[in-house]
Image 1 (cartoon, rainbow, N blue to C red):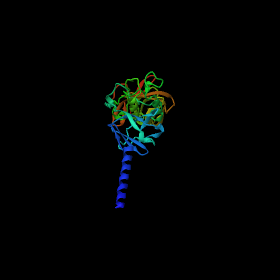
Image 2 (cartoon, helix red, strand yellow):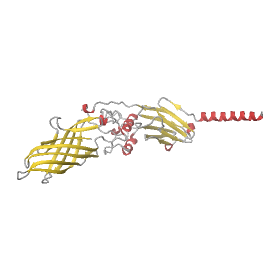
Image 3 (tube, helix red, strand yellow):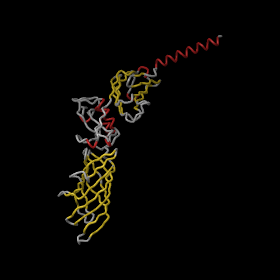
Image 4 (cartoon, one colour):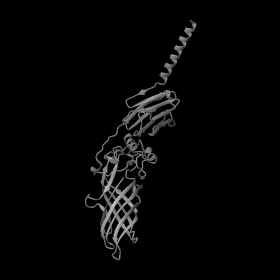
Length: 355
């Protein structure tokens, strides 16, 4: 009988202790936008699928910025004000929403609470790339002009977050919250058309930047060419050539450039009037590349493979998009497109490329 009484007594004590622990560390603290799952040594934050950024204010004695660890590659900006921590998180493009996005490791978890929460869902506009002529797409958030959005750009953006016009930290280039996705195809996932600044760097601006984080300018990389030359030369008479080539586009300080290498076969008339056929390789030097929403233009200089004479050359094509592939082409696209020698300007051929 005594043994039974002792077992019942122990069971009651264990149950009371467990109830005390559950009350001390509630498993879920849930609102419509997040779940704060408390743990004995801290907490984990989950966010609702569909939001683009969240800002929470954590209150509690002893909380420190060093206690916070972003998870799944999200971006985090923090501000400390006495016992409060403002935590802003974005970059949910590749997040698994069944897993936490923030880990809070603190022995003070018992007294921790979220006093404020703000979220944002960005507008998603997508028109057809090739019909959009109002603005040329740009990689919003590329603050060093290298064609990629990386930690270097985030290091530029983060200190301006939370500031408005009139403060030293505010810079209009970070005020990008009204930007839009106006293109399908290669620009579909990227905010590429700037909107009007509203004078404050807020949650919307961070969400736009974080959406673009990790992207590169879609025009960078290797392009493959085919082309034909067919014209009457004052030096060699009738010249005809076909060829293929590559262009490797890089970017620095917002300027695109890259070497063009071409392998071609041609027929021409030599100085003695003899018809010649040759295979040759050409590299176009000092190449500059400019894109608009509808055109690709390449300028550079090339050496004549026969006598080494230098020519300035311009290649202009109209852009066509199919899915994630893009094609500049000149044949059949109207006046002003093709391969040109300049000074003076004269059209000498047609070209197309793809990436």
